[in-house]
Image (cartoon, rainbow, N blue to C red; front, side, top):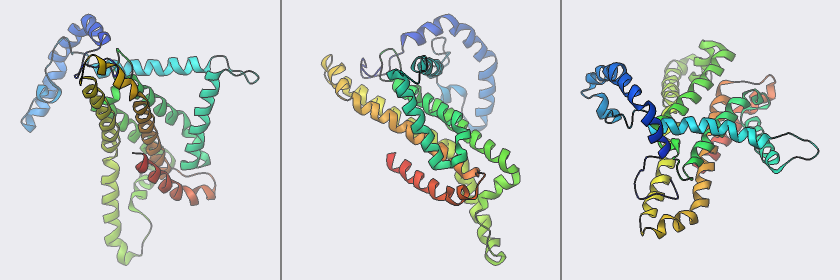
Length: 301
């Protein structure tokens, strides 16, 4: 997509292939079941499903971003399996060393942000990091598009992160204590009766919009990167369709890694706010670590 862009979106062949074979039954299902439901819901707001999602056609029955995200999930498993190879402590291959370096970097990061107990959340956080990175990098290759360049995919990732860190907080602290952490520190009754509800309201709203901020940040950066590459590619075809994008390729890779770091780091910060270690020193430093990590995330964004 990045290398062979022609100044506008081009439907990848694999998307056309999938819709050629299963587009018709999916389209029939949508028209019979999902579209009427969406129309009924959106009619309350004076609009309809097509105005929100676009025209319903056989060619777009399975959206490109859905297909690309499924491919990203498959690629994530394949890449990890290939890089892992045959593990060896005596003669590790370059792919194994790369995988180990990524593992150690991510492990050190989650321990630094969440605490020593943060390693228990490593599998989910590592899944987020790998999946987002693969999704971001897919847009750099011909025949593919970055699924994270569509708001539906990034919003789904944001909701997943939101559900996960809240489930962690509820499982460790219970519903009441989990909600109670939104009220801030205990204050004297004379001022707490006014300040505490105000803090709780602000924190509740802040938490509820986190899926939106996570998704928009990732989507906006990846979509902008893709749009810039397409505009540059169309400046003076066919020369700019190859040479300029190749020159900008390191920058695109950098953006993909930075946005992966931001999404992963913010997810870690949210986990650190709702979980506590088994030892007192973890609790004492959790807030300071979260603030430092948040500052790094803001700077990187």
